[in-house]
Length: 169
Image 1 (tube, rainbow, N blue to C red):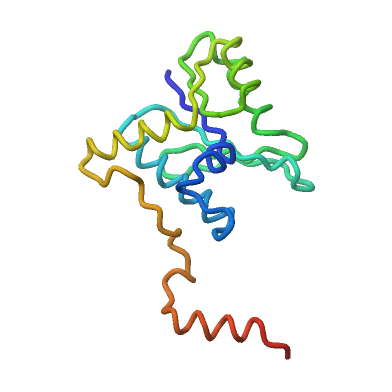
Image 2 (image 1 turned 30 degrees about the vertical axis):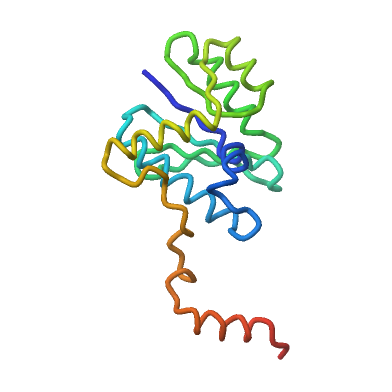
């Protein structure tokens, strides 16, 4: 088996030319990343796991979801994405090919010592761009906002809703 494990928030923070955390919600950024990785997975065919920290979320039991063909992991309270990734690589790294996408140097070192392969977020972005070109898509992933209800409303209506939201009853 060949796995690609992505530290989701690490990649979102590393790709500041794609994700605008000042103006986009974390949910929009997660969805945008998952769409990009899902598209890439269709080309690459590896098993892909995207891990998001939920260790600061009080009472989080953690959860695993399927998004297209991706496995999406939200860690439990007091468990970081790094903890999850380290356990995964330690358990399967000697019998499988596991590439881990993170810019965290300590995490990269631990991954390497457990039989995994480190990959910088920049390298993943380049692979996605290359795959997009091969598939005849735009070289860069689409950077518009996620397809939310608010993104489908006319600007005039959004302005009116904002006025209502800011008004005091």
